[in-house]
Image 1 (cartoon, helix red, strand yellow):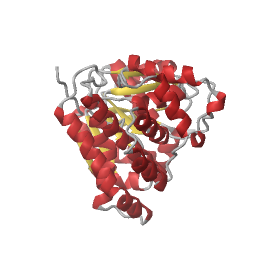
Image 2 (cartoon, helix red, strand yellow; image 1 turned 30 degrees about the vertical axis):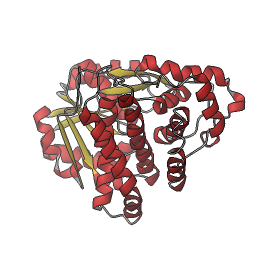
Image 3 (cartoon, helix red, strand yellow; image 1 turned 60 degrees about the horizontal axis):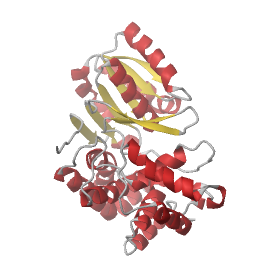
Image 4 (tube, helix red, strand yellow; image 1 turned 30 degrees about the horizontal axis):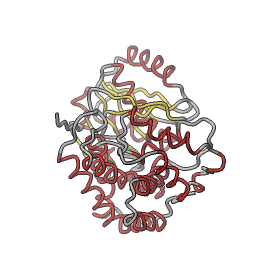
Length: 354
């Protein structure tokens, strides 16, 4: 079956965290905010005040340095005592992942409010679960996407530009991975056949990012919200989110999962920065050699990593055969790996990226 899934509502624009919170009222008037101490210090007072203006009462759980199992116990107690009707995930990847997990276990709707455009996690019904040290463990798949995704581009504007560029890399990966899946009649993250809409969204994401990233970065440096900036934010969050969830993930994210799941490695780099190297690895392993220089130079121009060394991954310190086998094994987690890609190809690609 062809299956497509999405959030119920997506809203994006300047000052959305001030002017659009009335949209949350359809979910209830008592909310559990899942966030972290940094975000709450930066935004929390004003955000809670604007909730109160809409007659939405709230209480907060922080996800700093927590173990997911312990967080669930705490969240259940807070939800019961405060009579929460919905969850607000406010922050970055960890707040979004754990907020979705809490909402799922508690059978509550969730509004996701990302504070950067560094990843495409906001729209999906997927959480990436890490242990307390940040090592990748698994994907959790839920029955429902977020009810609402609300993006304040003033907040995104004030986040570090490295986050916008990391999200760009994640968005480029969306199409590179989706294309391979479609070419080989593969399956998406839910093991369903992707729709044409999914590929179209992934391709649109890719093309918008290529066309607009330079102008968007220039606008952000000037402190200006322009059409290009808004377009890149939407591509990073909405188009990439719908694209990856519905078209599927492949080797670029398999690479990320392997190195983030290895407790012995001390990787430096954000999700998007790691995925940038994963894209180059996938292009080499799939032998798309004519395309490789374009993406290598594009990433280098944006100061994204293009080598394993830049991630603090030294091939002389790892078993390349085992490492390549682990990437292939991410098929079990839902990643599509081309049948043409084997350990030999991956090892050769790793050596080229060293």
